[in-house]
Length: 292
Image (tube, rainbow, N blue to C red; front, top):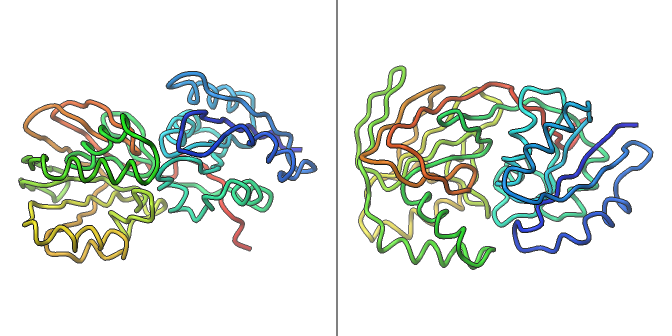
């Protein structure tokens, strides 16, 4: 019998969480797993809980929430033998989508019954972990605005349209092995996984198992190019667009003109002007659908 914990974020996304325990009892293979369900009470609580379960040698800890919840739970599991499980229940669910985990709660729980453990990479920005993407520029401003708005896809679109016409591009310097770039950019995104969520791909070729970060740089662009760039996020070819440049790096330093917002797995945070970003290879165990 494998001990497995479910950490539920009661405020993530738009779906009701009060049926989680019931679905677990109904759908989880109780001959295989002994489940524990806990609900977070404050920011950072999920990390503390995950660390405790890892110390108790739990087989897996399942994050029930969005990318922010996954970030908290996974941060407590990095470098341990306890695997991260995911039941997506957030607004974007980019990391789960990248791993081909269903965004339907019942299917995600059922998948755990026939899952396997894989090792994946994660990123660090100024020593703070990220597992999907982090970024500065327009997407960070949207994340900051979205955190104060109505959750869900409608709220996300409202934040995008509100900020698009007000946002001013910034100047960035990126330095690393073989990299020395100074550019004025709309945004700079560091991708371990390829999705922002909602099936929007900022780095279509990114992989969580290749030991690299895909650094997506969208330069300033005329208004006439905006619709095409936005559409290409959903058609997986934004990396082929004229105003998009993608480089690959294991470690680099980004310097901008001043401190400001950054998003880490969709959660807005204030960060200094200088950001040190690197990849940590195979530092996290994750449950995914069994391949054979």
